[in-house]
Image 1 (cartoon, rainbow, N blue to C red):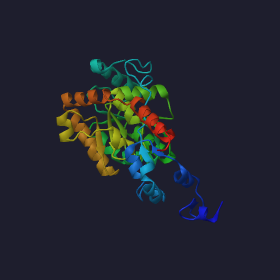
Image 2: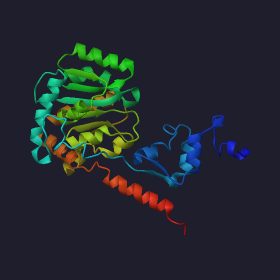
Image 3: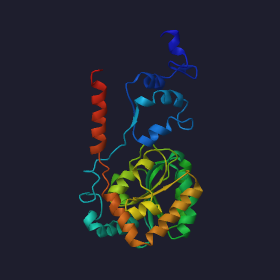
Length: 301
């Protein structure tokens, strides 16, 4: 390579060759899996020392959110849930909550607020924040159904919580696809308290299944969940809860908001229906990718 390639304006990265940097320098277009994450990586906090380059190439950067397979993730036909339902028959969803409580060893009760987690257990996913907020949630009547694996300290922490709070906390470590579907179909709320999240799929599945997502206001989580603040709720567009920054205090406040919301059955039902009617499929994103590819291949004028 010529000497200029190993300069800061070339592919040099902390004294070596940065292959990702080279890709960002030379690509015709740069895409991320959500618009907010595209903006976040242009900041020193999230750019991993590549934010200057990304800002210089901002015109080439585009965020297109992910989608999910809405044929596989379809509560009306899903073979892995206890009771199929759709937006017109959303009241039947309650049977899945009863089945989930039984599966996770939780005290039965349709009116008990049930929070679900389907996640890799890591600090990046903010599960350490949830572990710290969990005693307060349980004290206020909440239940937790957790499916995941990862960081050994987090697994041990949640295992201790389940042992100490039998009937209120249930954990399965590992991954079981059928249980993942049942959590989405049976939980009242699904938690995604990530410190950063390029897009996230769990909250998209939650929307599809009528579980209200509780998410940190980062990356694709910010792009796909409409916070149930006063204005959005009054306008009839809210689909879940956002909190920022990712901290125990802000997560606990979001959990309190969710508990308060659940007392208002009509509003809670409306939010569930808003989520189920949200298009979280690949149809829109695929069209945007196709348009992007066509723009690259179009002959220069």
